[in-house]
Length: 120
Image (tube, rainbow, N blue to C red):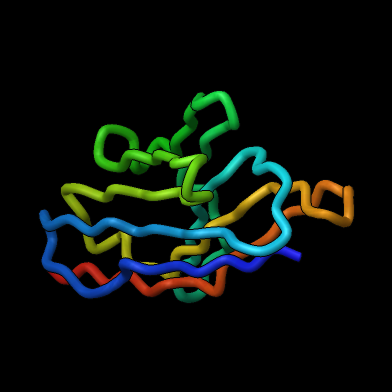
């Protein structure tokens, strides 16, 4: 099994920055694509950014140029640097990890979610 622990959420004024991190632990053999999703009140969960095992990144149009996703394979960590935050970025942010564990079955895991609040 794989456990995910997220950190870094909080409250910030518009224009500010936050950095989210998600660390995977457990019986991990390898990590595949990693990503961040978010869900605002009354809305569906949406993709924010993903990064492949090779380092290729993909961003939602709404965050391009403001957010940067990165991964540290040695630490089994994926991070999301969020700059120039806007009130519409307010949401619960979830990390998403594709992993092969000692069950030898590729699976997708979700973090517990971390709240980001951006005030105007």
